[in-house]
Image 1 (cartoon, rainbow, N blue to C red):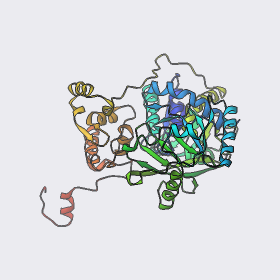
Image 2: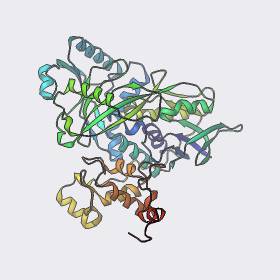
Image 3: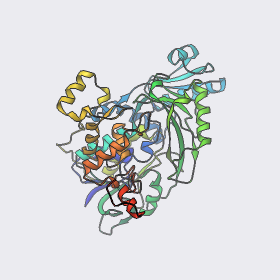
Image 4: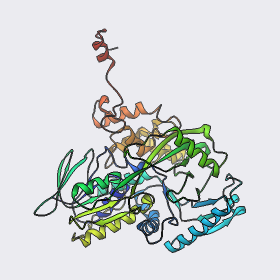
Length: 490
């Protein structure tokens, strides 16, 4: 029997797994996709929020500020890039300036440090590419940036190093409360017995709570679409630029990333389909118009990709983090929308406390190692460092992704690491191979070959993103035979 089964391999589930891996208990994380970070955690704004937006007293407000403070040290432990670039909320009218005053007061009540409102001259000096209509801004220097999927993967790797087991491609089909004690968690991969179950299933948390017989609530998917610009425009803005927010959204922002791109988005539209991450023309038009209001000279001819993410909005419009009163041992962690990425480390600590209150004994593990193995990022090294690395391992001298300067050695490492990559997209999230200007046009076939070789698999079985997404349909020889052609190897 496992002590804890965590359902959901997003930022929340992996944060909880890593936090609990400090203790001498048996843990398995179950995820329906072929990798961690396949849902909301790979499609969001990547902003570590300062904490001035959420209503004082809510879990969003409390956990945002607490999580923000944990990020720098946590990213250093896990070898994840983190940039403390600061945030600006820009007002373009007198009415919006009054909203800045409200946000300033909210932020102070929430415990955000060093907030201030700055005028037009200082604002333009900070960000010269902003619209001339910008009158003032709320300056939040504690806002930052992280790569959300790399952070999630790092948490998973470190949790796995410290004993957490990961069941991937394992959709939960039933959660049965056992008469003696604990649960039987049934999945498409088999069943697990557990003393405690943590429901961190993102968009599907409401459905799993209902299956378990716990409290009922609803999760509505809220779609946000984005456009990403080529790295040559990396200096266009330095800080995260927000418009003044609405009641349902922080608005369409213009934002840098830790990897050097600029993006605009997201819009905010409630939808019904929890799997719909399509990007459509009306959404693109909406985010273009929103982005131009903040930065008029956005380089739209140099958009390299678009994507959409879904936020899990609960009917309470706040995080739902509590032990079930109806099913002992079942813990709901649902409705983790923005600022969920920022809050995740603090949520993990809160869940640990809930489990202790529910009776789980946590004894610290003397062998716990908070550091995951460091990654060698070839693109960040100088020529001397590169030469030394190639001497140690010639695979570092073989560039697979030209756009992002990713080597064969880095792709091999991504496959061999804890909770390693098993698909093209999983390699992409770990190495950035395929995230550059050509969007994988050059490197994808080579990544496929390396995956097949390292996994000892047939190339036909390698997928883009798990079952049902095979890149190759068959061999030319086989097709020729079917069509009655020559039986040769051409």
